[in-house]
Image (cartoon, helix red, strand yellow):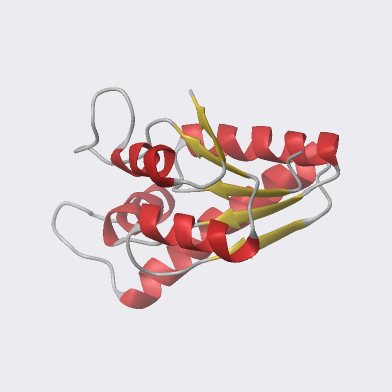
Length: 148
């Protein structure tokens, strides 16, 4: 049923929970998981700040810092997958709009399910669903699971 699962990660606790659930479903259905993170300066500032006392309010991270922060988020997802016992996991880190990139990759690999956190790190997200999750749920050609 869910053989190709994509999990969208942004470093938030909801996304980490989504990774656990996506990996658990992959184990149950003998499927594969692709952890996808689309890096942005805001997400990188959150991750870098959590790691090194980065002052996100006054400094914008460099491209190298954005890439490194993105890899940190994917590495956290890989650790979660390992802890859950999920064996078939890959990562993907495109650049662009998160929802657009997740949807395009889901189409490319023929995903059966996209799992995202209901709300991520964005402060301008809608009240009920984050803007990325809302767009994915509206436009996806496969099943979607929004984790609370």
